[in-house]
Figure 1 (spheres, one colour):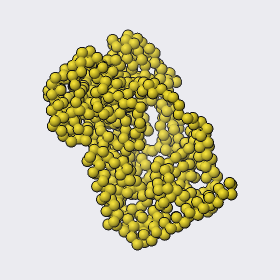
Figure 2 (cartoon, rainbow, N blue to C red):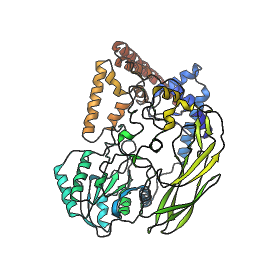
Figure 3 (spheres, rainbow, N blue to C red):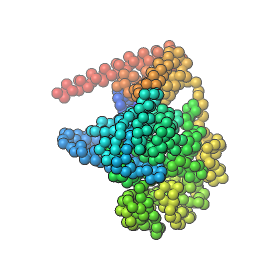
Length: 600
């Protein structure tokens, strides 16, 4: 926060903790953390006062944080204006543009898309009626309007023959809905099937344990493919999924979480009003087991070990030669593009892109850098720039992608700085990380001769084969022994409430059972209770940061002691802390009242 955020980046705004995310506000203030959220009460404030009085914390550190909070409050108050008229239509149009340019066409077998006017189309899927257009949990926002595929399809120029939900969103089988979907599929030339990850699959407070679409959606898709082979899938999901069902779709359009106008944008892509130009921002593996983190997550006991290092996503798949379903940067168009005349200069690259098809369209030109003879381990290629160019059919345009200070650098732990390894680099221009169209060579001078490690000590990282990194090699990468993350048998303030499962106190384990039962019940109903999830995953320390001062640090220590089986000792500390905390809070309020009376 000091060296990089406020020093290197010259940031002079506020630093605010996540809700309950503060561990030690005294140390936080020392580092420049200005505000604890959401409501720690006066206990944290008293800790700061005591730290200043004892000499543990400089008063200047408190003054600096207070000044930033005050400056932000005054600035925001001065610039805040009463809400006036604003153009909802223009906002919706911007949401439409964002969805239209980011939706990715993944498959278009036999050119089924765009759909011809008059095509008899049936639309199937709960997402066509209630789109998955945003995240779940704290990311929820109130949209001014939400387009749905079912509402827009009748005015699309297609011969609309019906729309049914087909499957239950909660994952339960429904024979009646299934029959209606199959009957509709038989009567249509083309089925537009809207499916994907539901809110329960991706939500705040939940980690996915697999990468599959809910089974009832896939079971229906497979049945539909038997009665109608012309299925256009419209996929909604906030992250990568496995696609063993891909053969059931003649075309597949991925809208991700497409926003309030996404349904209209995707429908216009299906009908050819928009030429798709979105590209994948992550690789889609064939299966979950192929991912670089599969053997290391979820963590065991108290350690989460990032043994994959920098080999995340395409950096891993490309380096280790692991086959993927769709690579990073991939996306289809209704037209084709040719690349030519690559020129590499000191400050960047210039090339020519030509639209060689019969449609106007946009291409995303991607710049990758590779160093085949690197001594410092690195991915086989890394994205270092891109440019989206819009071309009419037959048009050519020169594209410039500049180099910057990040193009050739790596982080050197020996010099504690960004450095450049000297030598020969490959400049690669492609339409994805696997579709490299043009290459050239460039040389760069080294900025240091010091290496961050001995290359021979890290054979797995040099090869990219990081699925089974030995302890010794991981320790060599860390530069220190691997911390012991084994369970000690005693809970601490930094353990989560869900870890009451390990508590020595029967009462504490009962609390866990109640919470776990409520969590499972809400998940089974298809509507995860985010409040329960929040409490379930919250560290004990957050109790003292989120209760408006009702729980002090001393009381928290007592609660943790009780959970660890020291009931009497913990209860005594909790009760003693309660009365001390209440007395101090009352004294502070009395002091404020007296001060206000004097001022008035």
